[in-house]
Image (cartoon, rainbow, N blue to C red; front, side):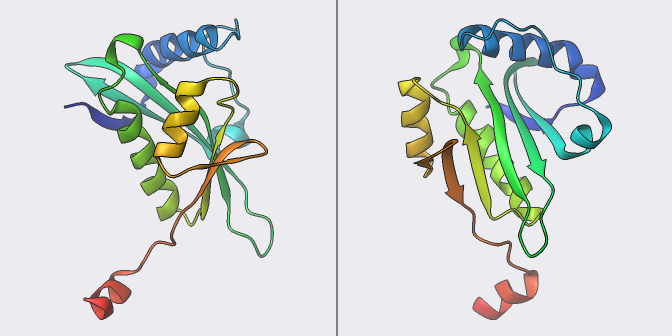
Length: 154
């Protein structure tokens, strides 16, 4: 079963390979990983799916700074699984881990940018509980419950 983990600096080559493949498959011919400025890097998170020692999937999150009186918002800017590893629930595992991470950070809505004309991506988003919106797909996330509130319910 694939494992989902945060990317480390040692994963740069694998991440660049997957991001390049993602862009080429989606019609964007840029190569590698864009270099974010310091502010963007602090708000970006990359998750990798690893199966049998090989990196087979990537999810890139961007957590936007909260505006006053509002929760931070988060976008999935890239979600890609190698063609030979699709239909094995890897994208689902990546997205579920991303939802857990951002919910723990107080994010109440996760957006998946794009999906455009990719019918498979649209079906996946809908199957994961996302609805179409202006920028792609969005899903409201329930607020993280404290241990105290969980004990009171149980």
